[in-house]
Length: 150
Ligand SMILES: [Zn+2]
Image (cartoon, rainbow, N blue to C red; front, side):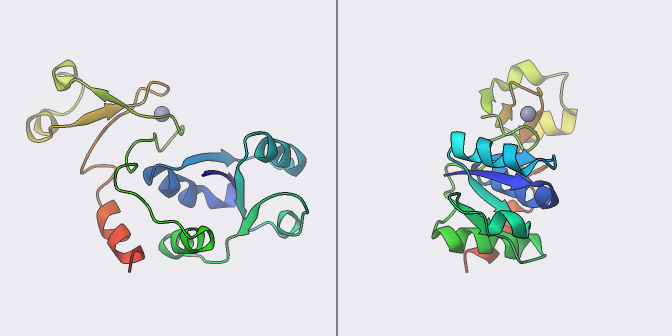
C-alpha cells in the first residue's frame, strides 16, 4: 500500500514513513501532476483538498482530523489496516528510502559516544546518509501506536 500526501499533511507523511509505508510528499500546487504520479505509481492520495476529493477515477482519502494521532487512526480505519511491527523503522523519515542495517563499528566516530555505548542496532539511509537508532527519532512511537491500536 503506497501513499502520496498533499503539502498540508507533512506530519502525517513522517508518521506513515515511521510505520514503514511507502509515502511520497507532494509539496507543489500542480494537482494534475499529482494525479498523474498517483496513477502511475498506484498511490492512494491523502489530502484535505476538496477538489481532489471529488475527482473521479483516483483513490483518495479525505483527512478530516487535526491531531496527528487521530489522522493516523483515520487512515488505518479507512483502509482497514494495522501497522505491522516488522515494517516499522524501515524507511527514512526524510526521504522515504528503505533503510539499511549498518555495522556498529563503522559508526564509532560518527555518533555521540553515549549513543555508541548504549545502542546495539543502527540503520542508515543510502540517500541522505542519516543514521537512525532506537530511542531518538523513534522515541514516542511505541506509545502512540499502543494508543491508536486501542
Ligand atoms: Zn534519507
